[in-house]
Image (cartoon, rainbow, N blue to C red; front, side, top):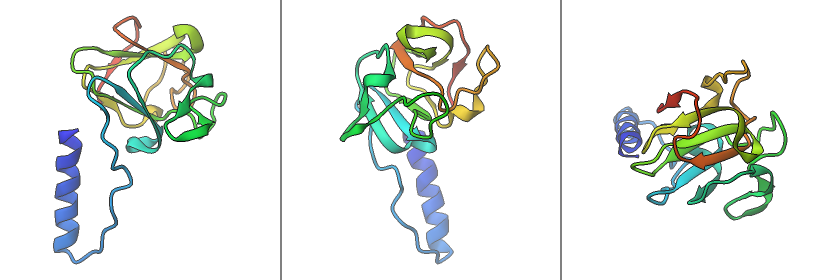
Length: 148
């Protein structure tokens, strides 16, 4: 998170010195240590789920404070998870295409993040954005490890 805060401060300073009015950052949420934060939009914005547990199916899990907004609404729905921030300093997160931790997958590095899953291509050839359905704390997935 420090890496993102530094970049935001530099950008704010450059805009301020240029005399440009700047609104507050869209994402002011800080993930709980040892948790994973799952966001509905890229760059850690939109709805958020601050989660300490592995979830075998996102179809029955709501974003925090949004009791009618699920993490997974079916393939290619824009409300589905698009970015993930892993605040667990010693555990990777395996993210799966199917529920029950099945199907093509990728991993997020310990204390790493994926700011936009549209940059990830799964082993099936599908794009990972708005199609993933479960996550598991651990190095269980055989897919690529990401941290960007």
